[in-house]
Amino acid sequence: MTATAVPRPAAGGLDDLRSRVAAVRPVLRNQARAVDASAAFPVAGLTALRESGLLGLLVPARYGGLGGDLTDLVRVAADLAADCLSTAMIWAMHGQQVAALVAYATPELRAELLPRVAAGEVYLASVTSERGKGGHLLTAEAALHRDGDLLRVERDAPIVTGGRHADGFLITMRDGPQAPRSAVSLVYADRTALDVRASGSWNPMGMRGTHSGALRLTGTVPLANLVGAPGGFRTVAVSTFAPVGHLAWSACWLGAARAAYGTVLHLLRSNAGRRQFDIRSDLLRVRLARVRLDLDTTAALLARCLRDVRDAGDLTAPAVQLRLNGLKVHAAERSFAVVDTLVELTGLRHGYLRDAPLALERVFRDLRSASLNYGNDRLLLANGALTLLDRGVDLGEERW
Picture (cartoon, rainbow, N blue to C red):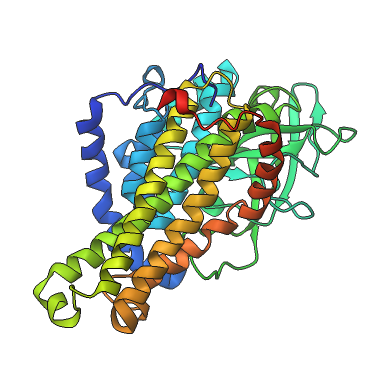
């Protein structure tokens, strides 16, 4: 999201937003175990999100949305992830797509689509993966074909989070048959304009409810459905997709890890827990302290990056890019490490068994995917190059 187009706080204020989230969370909590067991899309959770208005959190009020900002997005993502990380990630990635539409869609597309998103009618999925290039965001293989004011979409994607249930898609494609792979365009396609064919199965270790299977999409959409300039997806990615994605994903992972920590603390403080665990144990206390330190440092970096996106004049500045990429890497690694430590601390009965009340085993499997969701190695490689450009080693001290 551009520094000059940061969304405003949610209409109705924080209390209104909390009440909307509070109405949804029990649905997510009640479905989480079944969704994981069957690797089924969380239909009930998405229905609750539609009815709550939260699909329109980032839609400006003039289009009927809540007019929320990125702080709202982060808060809600963390809260939803406490109950079902799969549903939270589905919602967070939808929010990423909405942010791109708000910032870069044509006036015609905004006027037609954003009120439908605000009304809960349109859940958006992202189509960026492609056979031959994986999840690399800034290249594309399949090309758009232009016919007057129409665009022909023919796209295979090996992974589309929630795609089989999406009402619309934001799709990256090469700008034309003669365009280089780096000339990537972003186009919106309504499900009603496409032939959507699913293939393969979805049986992963974790994040099973995201139902991120393969899709083939074919159809024709208006030229006005281009989001951003033709071949200009890099601008959308740097200013919106990457920062909003890193912030929202990190909030989800932090929220899940924080909730796991809270359930363990509740167990330790209970009468039953005091009979099973020696809360005076030095090892137990050191482990708890390390977990809290990981949560606090991740939360602090997330807050720092939120300020960067809100206040920075140039999101492409090396120091800002370093922190945003670093946030994703750190949150992915340390949130998983938190739950790994909690499994070790609580042992086989509470931490390892699939039917244990604490559900640590499920969160452990879910968070194992975090480092793979736009791979940490790819971001660290980019950051290695960026460090050589940041001559002043800018840590943002002027805004401390």
